[in-house]
Image 1 (tube, rainbow, N blue to C red):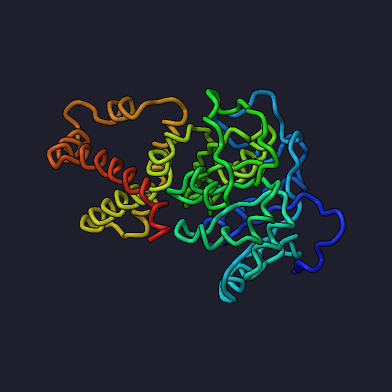
Image 2 (spheres, rainbow, N blue to C red):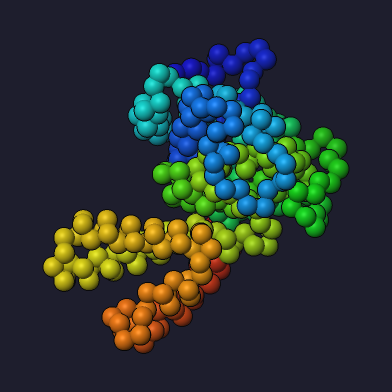
Length: 340
């Protein structure tokens, strides 16, 4: 693969991922797959166009944005670099990816867009160095750090805080004098990024231009769906979109235990349960409400209503709702742990 020493001259659009761990690698893989599909498809059939983008700007197309054509992945250890190289083997012949170990400032300097994907507690060590702060000047910075707000990042970068967020998500305020970076966007994808089915939520600072928002939407549409939200909604959406895959997994795991007790093989039961959950989800995405689905399945005097009543007796509904509230409260404190 290429090295930073080859980044001379006038570069193409470059995306750097700082902290290419689990989610960072998933995003990179999704972008590379999307890039391959774009190359083999008609211009109007890009993966970004095929995914649903909620609350986006009207009238834009994927041709309106400057897509990254080169990628830099930053890791801290040799082991992480080896892992990433192995994961990228599926994209042979060699993709335009440069893997960098321990040189964040040069990687940021070479980029137009930077995705901040380190651990929340590592924010200060990752971007707080003077060289990295200087290199961040004029870049579009996208953070996927749970619990870390845009003002938190601005404070670490010694940047003047953004003005009050605009009334509308795509409304743009005038740029501050020589901002560093030019704009910050906060995003939260989830673990389904690995299979191109992430539910990603984004919010941006008041300096973010429409073109910056379009680019962020396109980037995350390569790994699933995208919804714009306000900063005040972010912790709740972190719980609802980021944490609930684990909730769903626990529910399915419980079903599997029951299925095994009834004589089914665990793997076969897992496939059946997962496909059933997928079908129910597709019905809701098609417009049906959870209540409607429940009423259609739970016919009078049938077996389903007996199972539902048992779950109500065990207060499952309240337990799940309380778990989401607790999860949201915990998400709001993740950023504060970086200084502990």
